[in-house]
Length: 136
Image 1: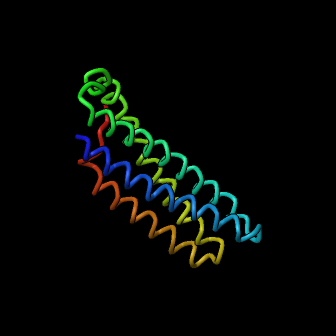
Image 2: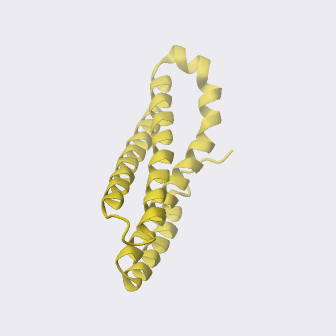
């Protein structure tokens, strides 16, 4: 089980860092288009969700690796699995939303394309992650 938490934390940290970089990049574009603000907000919200997931899973891995801590906190850790899984999915949803919104900054044609790609990617993400998401 500790390896599950480590991998989940790693992926969350990677995606959260990517979201934060996207946020910074969008802020640097200036206010030339009304979509910059919402796209940046979605990227920052995604990064925030994924930061919480990273912290939760990192500490869960540490607890699961220590037999004394595991005996004391197993129920608390299991209680967090569902909310962290949903927060992870929310973070990915927000990141894909920022991808879709970012295309509208350049043009309508690119906006339609990025929105369609983000939607198809969301379907793929849910399909791939469905067996691994824990809901309690």
